[in-house]
Each structure stands twice: as structure tokens, then as C-alpha cells.
Amino acid sequence: MKRCPKCNQVFSESWLSFCTQDGTTLIDDSVARSEPPPTIMSSGPPPPVSAPQANWNQPSGGFGSAQVPEPPYQAPQPIQSGWQPPPPPAYVAGPQQGLAVASMICGIFTVTIGWCCYLGVITGPIAIGLGIYSLVQLKNYPDKFGGKPFAMTGIITSAVYFVVLALLVLLYGMAIFMGSLSR
Image 1: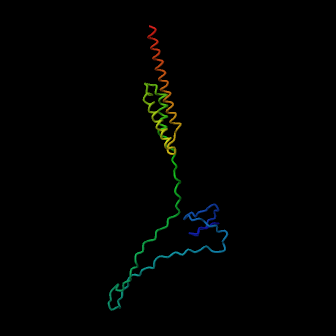
Image 2 (image 1 turned 90 degrees about the vertical axis):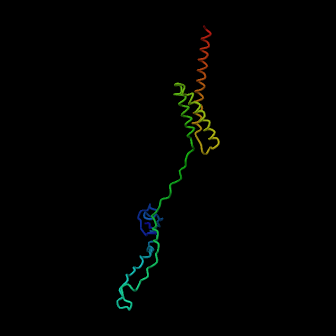
Image 3 (image 1 turned 180 degrees about the vertical axis):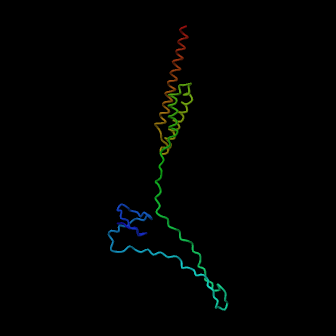
């Protein structure tokens, strides 16, 4: 049996460790059952103020000639709220990887769809630039930025696109040159 020292509520559940009403830590009451729980005395309501009474037999006469002094104003006591749960743990944000991921997406787009209408010529330099900028940020602020594999993927895929494009232009140029020699 456990008891709340604040509100004197008794709990029979052994797994409880806090009062369900006010959150106070419970005291194991099964050991000290010989003494009664302490009585908490609270001040009662203020005494009633009696209304003025008629003084017909007084020389001054009239109703309410004997004034009862009004008690001074007392601010109401703040009501103590119940148990408040502890604040949630602080959220730990991971490293920023936005530029590195954008570099990887542009690099993959360059290698796959970039061959269509030479869109890779536009997205390839963007992927390389974002990847290099992301790596510089990662080197200067390693605790704030991350995503090195993403940035490297964007740079490498765009570089592969430009190497293959250069080989195709070179081979096509050589084919044209050889074709003009044979005539």
C-alpha cells in the first residue's frame, strides 16, 4: 500500500510511484501503519460579516447607525494546478544534406534523361557545382552539413556524362573526317 503525503489518498497498486491527483511521490505506507496519517489543517472560509441592524432604542436612532467595519481586501490565493508532465526531450536535428541530394538528383537526371535533346549539358554543370559546394560546406562545417556520398554521386555521374559526350563527339568527328578523306 502506498499513500500520497499531500492529499492522503491511499493506493493499493504496487506499481504506482506518483499520485494520480497531484503528482506527488508516493510513500510506502505498509511499513508504518501504527501511526495515523497526518491531518492537514487548512484555514476555513472567512467569518461571515453580519448585516447592519436597526438601533431603534439609541438616541441617534435610525437603521444602520452602528457600522460594521468591512474587512480589508485580500487577493485570492492562486489555485495550485495538478501534476504537470515534464517537457519533451530536445529534438536533435541531423546534418543538412539538401545541396548534396540536389546534386545527386541532377547527376542521375543528367546520365539518364539528359541524353534527350542534350538536357544533360544544362543539368550536368548544375550537379557538379552543387556537389562541389556541398563538399566545401562539409569540409568547413562537418558538424552542420552531411551527405558526402550524395554529393560525390552527383559529381561522378555528371562527369561520366561529359566524358561519354566528349567521346561521342570525338568519334563522330573522326567518322566525318574519315568519310571526307575516302572521297
